[in-house]
Image 1 (tube, rainbow, N blue to C red):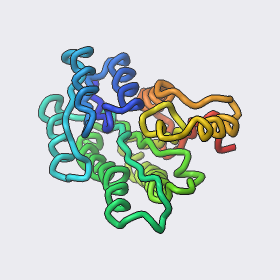
Image 2: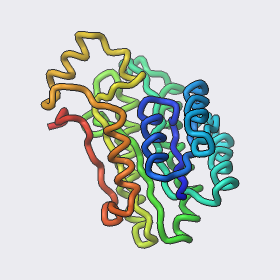
Image 3: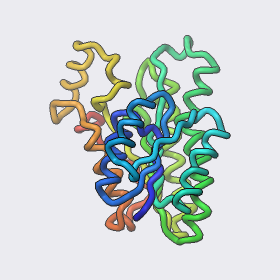
Image 4: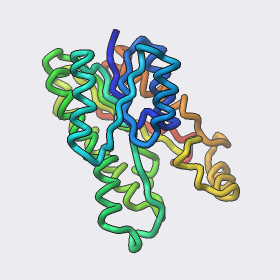
Length: 240
């Protein structure tokens, strides 16, 4: 069996990712920070297939420990899915330097560190998949979410640059950019705001976590061996 390391595994999208990869025959090491109950639930449901590991992605030592668990127990990581993300909803002028730094630490820096840790074995084995979960806001930008938008845009640039670096070594790097998905992060939208978002989405609804998981799983399969350096919008046409 292959091994997937998924960050943010206790969230809506992360949980869907874990379930999909297990369904596809992977052991899953799922990093989580505040969602211990969800991680425990996944461990109970998928005994000996899902392994939750607490990791505050602002802390490099905890990131190293997360990778170390996967390395110690499974030898290498076949698929790295960098899904964890945090947000702050306020004007740029009200955003503190600490908030900005925290968002970039979790959303971008952790992906850099984990990629750096996983790549030597991937390159040695001449195969591997990395998927960064960005956002439609990384392409379009969102008022009141400047730090989040900037961090997600950084992931798109990281995807394209890293894909060029490691393609000759058989490693594919891609990026998935979800639109508004049914998740805890988007629960803050009021009923009126959500109605406005849906009205601007050509397919007439918000997305499901499973729809993100399906694409990530495909990009980590052998069927996607000729796909790298791409950023895929999964937004129901919101960005058109």
